Image 1 (tube, rainbow, N blue to C red):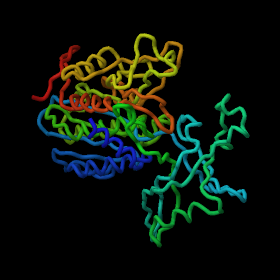
Image 2 (cartoon, rainbow, N blue to C red):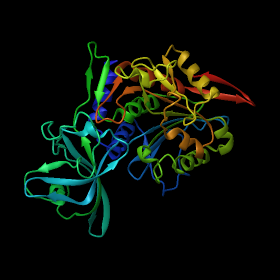
Image 3 (cartoon, rainbow, N blue to C red):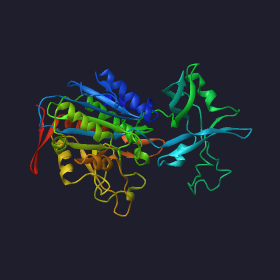
Image 4 (tube, one colour):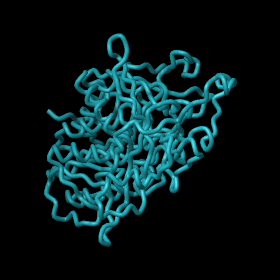
Length: 429
């Protein structure tokens, strides 16, 4: 258990945002013999093998082709690379003679108060120009650099009665007690002849992931939504070997803001890639889709120790209770897809649990439905149970990560065969 838990914590510590998530995934894929492809190149020459392609440096699709037969489908797992944070605006410097602050935008639906009084830094992507050539460079200022200070109770007497904060006034980070500018700060991360043309930079919480609890039964970490699903999904994909299906791993950016980008789940990135894979394999694309299945892996709400009434009364989700199957009209799960996933778990005794939100509460959404709207195949929404979703630090069960890995590994080593309206699940021997 500790090996995968420690691996996840290391992955989180080294993944400050979506750009670094894709970069770290790429490194693991390359280390495991995958070949990088590019959308603007021909794929006609490809032999059966392991490949990946990225989109705008922040989304990635990896796949394994086999070249042996026509009655195959795509086994797809989808996750997302982004987490709620703050982006750095242009001309961000705000100096009042006492404090240098940076002007920021909020990204995604974060819990505002959780960002106060934490060590923060900046990471993201620079767009550089050198001799009329434009290039991109990832940058992570690996230092405790900024802080968003809270107001003391002595000057904000209502702080414990209200948690309403103005993001333009109350949530700007302090970076220095002296004047300065962002471009100069970034200068040490670029070559002398490079000119910074633009950037996509974000704040990130520098707190390290750690095991907590009497028996190390929990993980406390930033960005577990959705890095805690990204990591076991990627490992299970790399560890799979399935001649009866085309295994696909996809990680999309911008889930936290609706996915309406060229690299989001609500784009043709996945369907276009699947079409090209089918052509490589010499398969009928629509027949292949008919034999396919999607698992959308994103986290779910565990019952809260101090607010148990916020959970559904008959479907209680607990930390270390197993992989969560998410049911709601906002999710892709239906009776068929739920049955398939439960069978995939049950074949090797993997724990699972059903999630419904209370009937009088609004339920969130995932990449599942957006992906399914472009790739019309059976799909199920699953996730890891967690506390404090969208907080600067979130809590998950350390054993649930193992269950997620095992369930997805089973999925990546099976084939879902359909005969008219019926189906059966075949496992690799």
